[in-house]
Length: 207
Ligand SMILES: Nc1ncnc2c1ncn2[C@@H]1O[C@H](COP(=O)(O)OP(=O)(O)O)[C@@H](O)[C@H]1O
Ligand SMILES: [Mg+2]
Image (cartoon, rainbow, N blue to C red; front, side, top):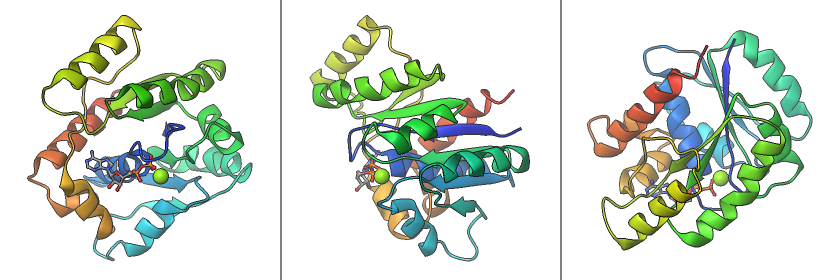
């Protein structure tokens, strides 16, 4: 049975599509069967996937809208090892369906208070649907006052946060523009190292 990872966050620009694409690629490294589903009508990942070179690791890709997502998940659960779902930037029907179908909801969070506040609706939705969820800190600076403030606030709230985080790295945008993940475009870079660490930690959620 596949592990279904839904990437959700009502705030646009938080890094949902970046995280979904890069995780799917990293989880597929070594030949794992991975499906990537784009449930965002903006079709960011559909366009990214269309750019993928023929030599890149194969991903099962689909862009099912609305209730078709539930059927696609049911089918893929039996056929692949990991399903990664990207969702639109709001907490409405499409996100709810994707969250409901998740084994684990990943909520990318940039370290700022507006982003933290915006994540509350997504975390509440995951809680309402009784789905396990984790925040993934994205564009996290290595040090600084804002980092400290946000990390302290997350600790105070006892928010579920993945220990692995992603820094603010141009490699993400560069790889994306080529239809690649950072582990493919710059496999020795820091961004690739971070994505691999996150992917290997997520593998442990697979029963
Ligand atoms: N860790 C990162 N470092 C640098 N740029 C990033 C990072 N994560 C996302 N971005 C950039 O931020 C922008 C928004 O990211 P995106 O994944 O499209 O967000 P969302 O899907 O949540 O709207 C994109 O230009 C992307 O390249
Ligand atoms: Mg997106």
